[in-house]
Image 1 (tube, rainbow, N blue to C red):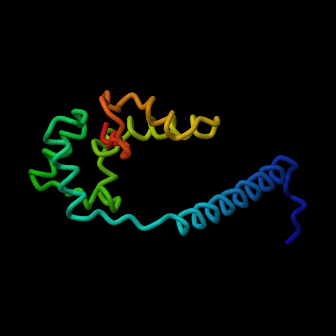
Image 2 (image 1 turned 60 degrees about the vertical axis):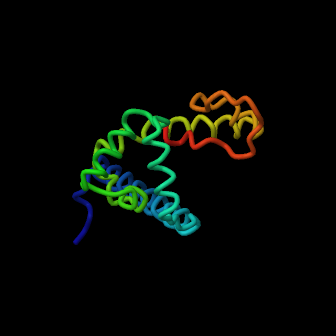
Length: 142
């Protein structure tokens, strides 16, 4: 069948749709490549215990402490959070949203040329240190 019936607007819309589909396929390919490059994250029992101790000692914001309460109640586990299965929960997303913003800010500083020590020392969640510490704080919990 001839395509003579298509108006210029329909042809333009088809071209735009084809371009958007091509862009979507390219984005999906990039995501797939990026995902393949990510290291597998394994949350060990020792690391879970360390996280829980930090939270219970009051070194985490209220949103993260509330997550720990839900974990203690059996709603989900830290493994569920680490493997992504609990990330559909809005309170889990909200609990980590501030830390994601902090990490984005740190990346921007690094991209701007600041060295890692400067970025770490200017972390708004880093407690004041009386002495030098080789290990950065677990401020991702804040």
